Length: 166
Image (tube, rainbow, N blue to C red; front, side):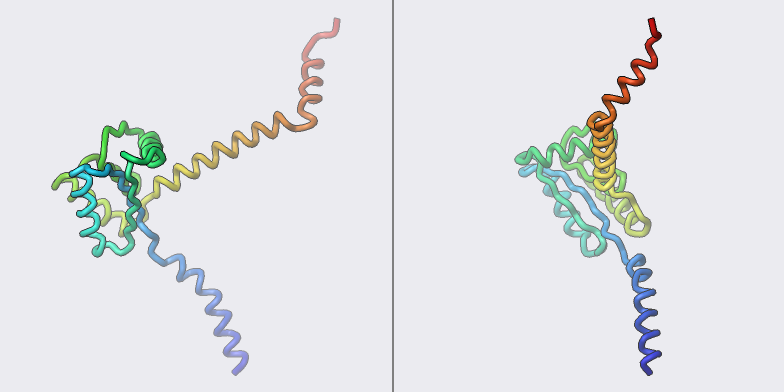
């Protein structure tokens, strides 16, 4: 009995990571809006309305009129997506973006949500963070090379070696 229980516990421990991998990931939707913007209010209501249909959908809302930090984040998204953002609402789902809001764009937005709910779509914010991390790492490595205690001595040796003796 004790042996059977031990085997059962170990088998659960073995299979648990696989069940976790199959769990549905959250679909982050990045919604940039302005307080008082009527089109933004309509899109916010639309996103809230369809939220029940897509339980994996998580709306990340950023008001940009009164927040410089959120406006800066919107610019970072625009730079990454290589798009000149002219105004709000501006919505990012996966690596697709939607500027403005009307009946036609609501259908396109929902189609993209459906697609990303069924398939794995990239998270642009994660990509931006990864790129920033790589830049910081490269800058850190360059700083370390310049601050290395042997670097100055080594560059002097190269300089002496490269100059012809008189």
